[in-house]
Image 1 (tube, protein in one colour):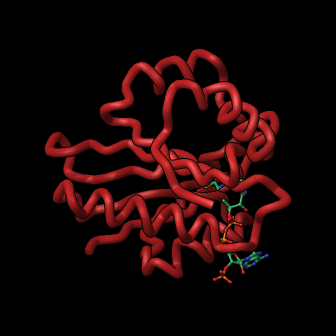
Image 2 (cartoon, helix red, strand yellow):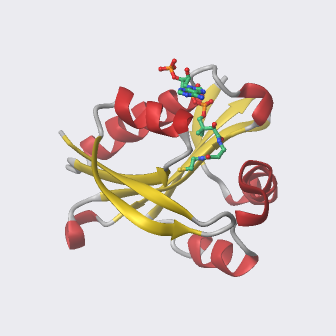
Length: 149
Ligand SMILES: CC(C)(COP(=O)(O)OP(=O)(O)OC[C@H]1O[C@@H](n2cnc3c(N)ncnc32)[C@H](O)[C@@H]1OP(=O)(O)O)[C@@H](O)C(=O)NCCC(=O)NCCS
């Protein structure tokens, strides 16, 4: 198992994994095109076992413009959940972004997404705000998290 950066040849497999993780809330082709056209800001980390993508993390690095890194998506293949892969991805991303001088990390998740809330709290992200009815399908509040290191 290894963590690697996204390469365009991973595109179709990554989109399939996003569908598996988010179902009808997965990103559409238009959004994927926008993301993949801007790989300078959209940084994508993959966990690969043999050649299979089993987990991924996407962040948007605002760099000096806004000085924070936003977690935009994270997902682990259902059969590999609970094995620490999300933790490994976040750890790798934070170390990587620190090297670029980034110290402010942000993200959000559904109020019912207890595994993701556990991941945030394990990295000492603070829950700073509840954003009412932020999500659709089903309508749900978001918990917003910040980490300053
Ligand atoms: C959220 C998600 C990415 C986590 O991935 P993962 O690789 O299983 O995560 P990890 O194994 O690193 O950590 C999961 C943690 O949640 C904990 N957990 C699992 N179910 C839980 C529950 N019902 N309540 C509380 N904690 C729970 C695990 O014990 C583990 O914590 P620990 O290692 O400190 O014990 C994965 O569940 C997923 O892909 N979900 C669907 C997509 C999604 O919701 N993405 C996040 C959108 S913000």
